[in-house]
Image (cartoon, rainbow, N blue to C red; front, side, top):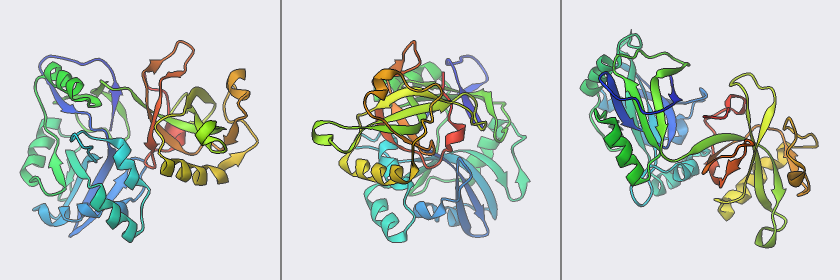
Length: 315
């Protein structure tokens, strides 16, 4: 179930949570084992060994949890940039090393199944009541608090530099796979997932390397179709990330421009290298311009939990 972007609703019947800047994940607990599934239904259990203890911590035989995997920065704020250092790792030795450097917490906000009973048709208040009964905060998991004062939480999110707030109808049932208006996300900091369609060479210290990524989005999720050009991002990269991107983009190289219509002539004069539109990047930005370009974008990382075909422009 996915939230829709919108303005903050106020009044009776709404609850409010922090919008966690992490990776959405379902956790299946069954007969003493834990399986972690990403937004795009990939089994990513090997990447998050710290969640294995959930099986023993829950006083139930089976459960299905919904929540967000979160890594925090030096100020204790959720940071997708830190989290993405772990998202692509699967080899046990690499995972263990990076887990010690970048620990994550699973912030749980919903309970969908419990001991064989489907809870998705229950109102959120009932699902949360059951969740609070079975889940005690642990070393690497916690409940996402629900607040009753939305404007105050939004102001606190703004003051702390958090991504935003999610408002949820307390009587909302859980509708798997749907983007609904009973959950509304209200962003303080603008972020957007975009598809990488190419890159342009850098200059100066980045001569011969990636200078900027060329980004786009689809009109409708899951349909494919034209990739609309959204601009380029040339800041926010570490040297290590540039090397990783070079390795990932090389086998995707193609002579065909994936954007329709093509980028404006000014971009074409920079000698773009096109790639098959398969990688998804997360960027922070100031605003969308009137001609549909990102203003002041900054690269945050790649999203392995999102499929390129599902990436659309958010309002």
